[in-house]
Image (tube, rainbow, N blue to C red; front, side, top):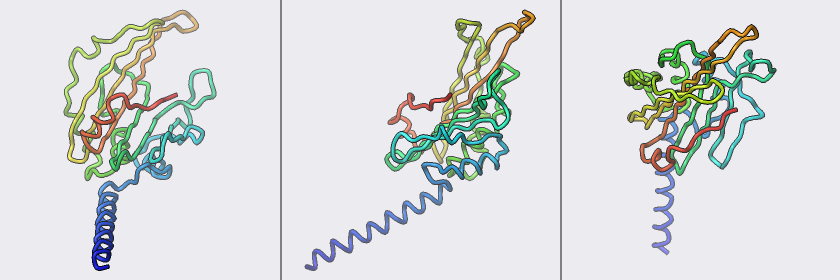
Length: 227
């Protein structure tokens, strides 16, 4: 009987310890995963980013995961009434660790990567992930990354006047393992008068893993679907 009492007490103590550990972890990260819609909306407002969550595109592929698609409240695709895609957000708890995938899409005027133009988006992802004492920590880390001078010289020409080139960088921070992927797209076409025009756009992907081990476990093929 005494042995059973000791076992019961030991289980209770372990339960309390695990509970305290989880509570400290939640306090450290400031946000709860998977992310709630209210948190995403509040963070959009805090960072000054335009966009509203598309309710019909909110989805989850398993327990502990949720994805949101954010679309422009004012801009539409050329010649359509469909709201322009602005961001994709996927958050998940994977075996007790958190992972965040975000993708942002914008039209751009310059071929080179201008990190300052994407500051709001990177800060947005940083705040959603939580845990960083400085909301600009991830942004500053990638701001220091030197983009190869011949980056745009490696653009791949595609059928229909399209071209594309991508850049990727990684950084290990105390709060997590971060990766950014930048893809520049160009489309050469003609206006109704036959004059050549060129449309340029870019997408920035910001992924944050709780650890490098989690990044390795999930692999580099984990990515969001956009529309």
